[in-house]
Length: 389
Ligand SMILES: O=C(O)CCC(=O)C(=O)O
Image (cartoon, rainbow, N blue to C red):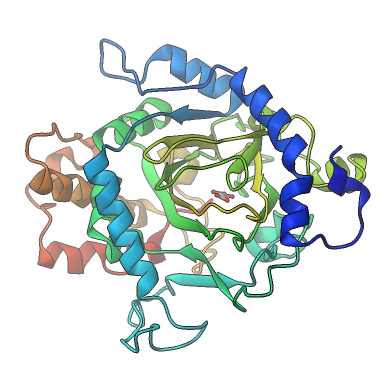
């Protein structure tokens, strides 16, 4: 148990950072022993290497080092910086800090989410089917902190050319195919922004909400998420996971925290620290969360996931604006079309890279070439068709 567990008052930002120190170091020590990090490796058939796959299924996560090269990383950082600069000057405003129309006023889904610095907006609420039952420690921000800080960005494939191209990354799509089959389907995307000394927490949770009681439930049924890290993901700002919990069914998070004396510093949890350009792969069923970013370092994680087609087809949409829409063949095709166009957008930008071949669109490659017209038809407001389960 860490020092903060014994306190019932709200620590200041600095007290929180200091109080987490020993927990972070112990988590780092455990994480380094797991053997689930390194560069992407493929086997002779071009699939994700079986040793990596085995480590992923054992622990429920993997850290891939050096996935995006310096040029791609710089393009992503530039696009995200620009999207952040175009955010409404305050929640609900029509203009950005420079008085320009804020980005996304014509998007069907609001692309920006704000929250109070160092708060926990989900913990203990019914948001997202109540999957965040406990509240994280909410440190008191420094006096100069603004009233609101950016928390999440949505609609990356519409808002940022580099992010659309990332969505067509051949190595990431090959991993998706190895784990979820050739007919894998997309899930959704969101960019987590954890500003230095201000970033809000994401309370402990498991992601999936659909299949927990299904007779065919297994450790992969709710898919996985990638997080492409644009800056170093440090012990002080990164996502934490409780290894192996993706295999254990639904966890009683409340009981776990109570057993831990009410502290959110769960024993056995490990930090997914890594460098800019690294990509983490996280099973959606693993127990995971991130603490208020009381550290001096910004984290920006481009998060997008993939499912088995069989997990999605015929289910109803959860966790999204359009909850309870049926996820039928048509909807899957329309949402998956973003992958096909992302592959072509990437190919047009980097013609020397071998593009990924997405089996469900293999017969439609001529139709799904990236252009202004296909952008309007398939990408504009694509995230109203997310396949969230
Ligand atoms: O990156 C984070 O801080 C939270 C990510 C998360 O909870 C998720 O992807 O479900």
